[in-house]
Length: 114
Image (tube, rainbow, N blue to C red; front, side):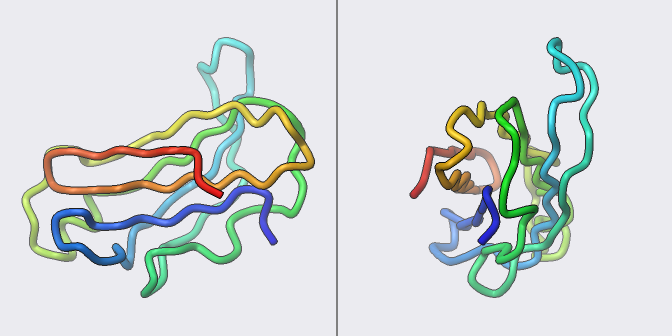
């Protein structure tokens, strides 16, 4: 299983958000001014990316960047946020990190999942 997993739920429609492109990136420097690509994927029919990066990652700062503009355009929805970036600290290299996104056209939220 991927060390980091994600899924996207369309809170306005009450269902998984299929077809959302996402990228997992690692901070390339302490100031987080540059990012190194780790993995890319697109959410499936259940709003998940089953293979999202390697099984093991080093401790550090990572982010998941969701291309919400592509999703809103594909679904014919006018959205306010063309991109959502969730930055998080991966401290425990033995723990699984689940980074979900709850999305609607004019709001989003996230939490540390299990």
